[in-house]
Amino acid sequence: MNLDELDILLVEDNPTDAELTMRALKRKNLANKLVWVKNGEEALNFIHAQGQYQDRDPEDLPHLILLDLRMPKVDGLEVLKELKASEHTKRIPVVVLTSSQQDRDVVESYKLGVNSYVSKPVEFDEFIDAVSTLGLYWMLINKHP
Image (cartoon, rainbow, N blue to C red; front, side, top):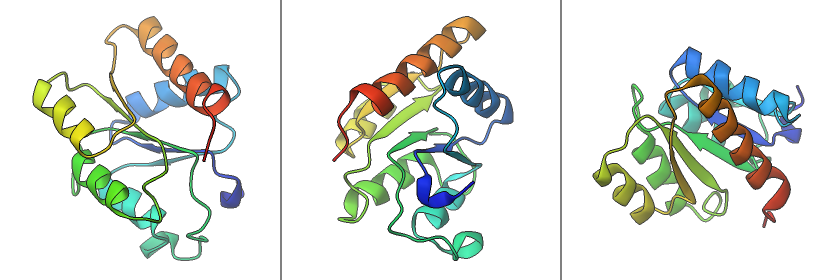
């Protein structure tokens, strides 16, 4: 895939959840330009074109970031904080897609500037529907800056 055509950056450490998310987006033809990274550190390296992504153009930013919160190395709240603090990345819509339903995570995410917070449904069909709806809204209905 040509990374200068990136639409969605999926930041998810759980391979099953990542696969379900990608499957749901593929059903709506929204996963053709998707990159999956497996933790917060890898996400920041990708965004800033560092480490294994140093050959990537840092000006080619995703149109949407789907971000899990509970991840090894750097958690989702730290990623969100860094993204929204930077002039270069603060306009990228970030949707937290997490299993956490804790009020403090919701409140902290919105304090840090998240655009939407979605708790992952447990049931397969509900999960697929939720991710499909998210993808359609953020990629087709929402106007990008």
